Length: 338
Image (cartoon, rainbow, N blue to C red; front, side):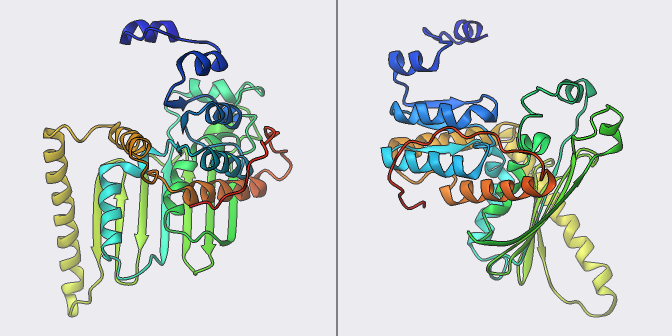
């Protein structure tokens, strides 16, 4: 497959051994898109060879691995990031701008992140459900582990570093149960509270169709970023006299949807509205941080917090599962994580 891609894009060299590639080519940046169990080991090899690293989600298997890689990158003066491309879609960029400009009327009070995952053709689900040795089955969080970092990362952006409470519950849907893997769960609900009192709710479901949203509620107003429709809905809280309460807000909501439709048409015509816009934006920002020495697009604080929340979730829903053995960490100085 590597040879086919090399021929297709006119690439002169391809390798089946990482060490050889690092020695022969000395790449500026390495994108690691292998199963999560290998992320820490491969990421460490690339950093030690002097390459910046783009790691596909999830960043690593455990929070301690995450912290170790980030510490090594900082110690070597290199950049590292994670492929949370949905943080950089058009609607998420607009939402971030509104929050930074004070649209909420203060710090976020409550967050809601919804992530639906449609199995579609059940042959995909059968591949890992029917194989106990499938790499998805071997992750501490199994199916959740490979997917939910997208939705958790959206919450981490607005939560304090110190999370004081996480309550997670999970179960198996009837659809997945019919495939015969009793221990594989595919429905997850999580409640979170941080030290400042901000609360958050996370929902992952294979049964809900077409619901990928982030809702941010503030003291005055709220915003909803809808990944599926590429929309940002602004919800302003205001009191109306008498029966106007039943008429004015629905009209305003209708105008919000019309505004989004207009913006989507404009962005489509400008070739800015497409499925991989978030990935392109994230990669361009990461490369820019490498060239200019500017901050990485996703703060390390958020990457670490996402990993810690996931560790806590999996410890609750799979208490009997052992963690995947971690790669031996190199002895590097512990530096501050920004």
